Image (cartoon, rainbow, N blue to C red):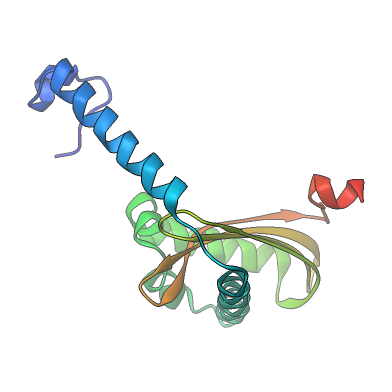
Length: 165
């Protein structure tokens, strides 16, 4: 049973003090784990390369309408927050609105050294029906980059720091 947001904490099988202690403990572990995690420059470049490969595969799969493969290979967090039908509908709308993916004109990648490792990417891409800005979040899961979030906008948008250069 998923807890209903309107239910008081005590009706979920605990009391406020227990929930507070549990929440603080989880936060301490999460903060200490993410703060102590370090990766070297070579690992950063490997994570970026893996994300680029995963994005290339995603573009091919969208072109081929291989939405099932995209959903199957997505992160657990994406699959638990979005139904298969919702993901398929979103990807189908992208394909209908923008057409086939053609090429990339600008890439900005950032590796976030937390557990699991995240790679966030901004792509300015050319599609059959126009230019787009794509935002990706991939997470490292075992030995694979898995899609955690994907958003697409019409037109080119550049990250703020890129515009300031």
